[in-house]
Image (cartoon, rainbow, N blue to C red; front, side, top):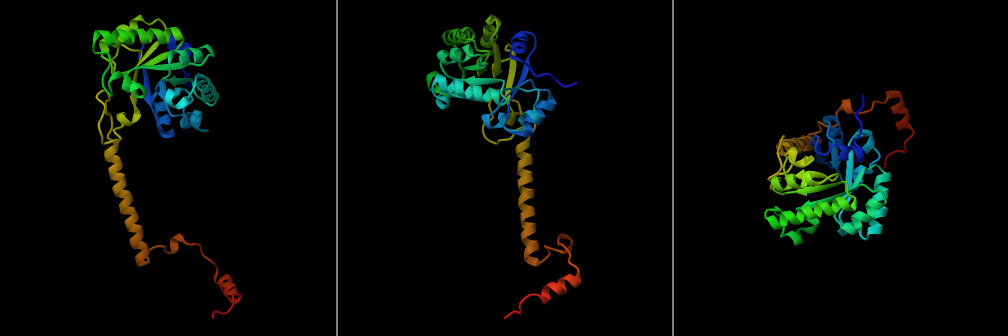
Amino acid sequence: MARKRLTVADIAALKGKRQLTMLRIFSLDEAAAAEAAGIDVVSLPPELVTHPRYREVAPSLFSMTGATHLEAGTKEDYLRWSGDMLNRGADAVYCSGSMTTVEFLAREWIPVVGHVGLVPARVGWTGGYKAVGKTAETALAMYHECLAYERAGAIAVEVEVVPPQVAAEISRRMKRLSLWSMGAGAGCDAQYLFAMDILGEHKDHMPRHSKVYRNFAADYDRLQAERTAAFREFVADVQTGAFPSDQYLVKMEEAELAAFRARLPVEE
C-alpha cells in the first residue's frame, strides 16, 4: 500500500506525538532515496520541486521549497511566487520575511514555514553564524518570535542551532506551530539535516549538529581517480590505434563497398 503524504493538518495533529524526519535535498536521486527510506518532510530548491519527474519519484514527501525575503521581493511578489510553487508540486513555502508577510501569505491559505535561531538571511542581526538563545533574554525573544509566527498563521518554524532546553520549552508552549530542529534537540517536532552532511559529501567544515552516516567524499575521490584513469586509457588506445577496433564499427558488404567506390570521382 502506497504511503500517504502528510498534510498541513497531519503535521499539526502530530505535534508532540512523534518526531518527524526531515532532509534538505538537491537532486532527483536524493528525492528517490528519501522516498524509499520513509522520510517525512524535505526542503528543496524550486528547480527540483518543479522538475517534471519530481512527484514521480517522490509522491509521498511533504515538500517545502523556499525563497528568502532578499530574493522574493514584496509580500505580493511572495504570494505570486508561492502560488506558483504550490501549483507545481510544493506543499509549503519557506519565508524569512517579516510577520506582516507571513500573515499576508497565511491569510491566503499558503502553508508558511518560518525560521528562528541562526537564520542565514538575517545573521547580521544575531551576531553572525553562531548559536542563538544562550541567554535568558535571547531565549525569551525567540519564544515571543515563535508565538508571533503561530499567531500569524505559520504552520512551522525551523529552529537552527539553539540550546535544546530552550527549543523544548518553546515547543511545549506552542499549540499548533511545529518546530523543526536543526541542531536544537529532540524536544522539537522534527529532526532536520542536510543530505550532503548525512552522506559526507564535502570535505570542508562539518556543522556540529550534523551526523555523518556515509563517506561519499571518499567514494567521489575514488570515482574521480577512476574517471581520470579511464580517460587516459582512451587517449592511449587512440594514439596506438587500439581504438576503434572492429567490434565497435559497422560492417559493410564487400560488394556494396566496391559499388560505392566505383561511383566516386577519381582522386586527384
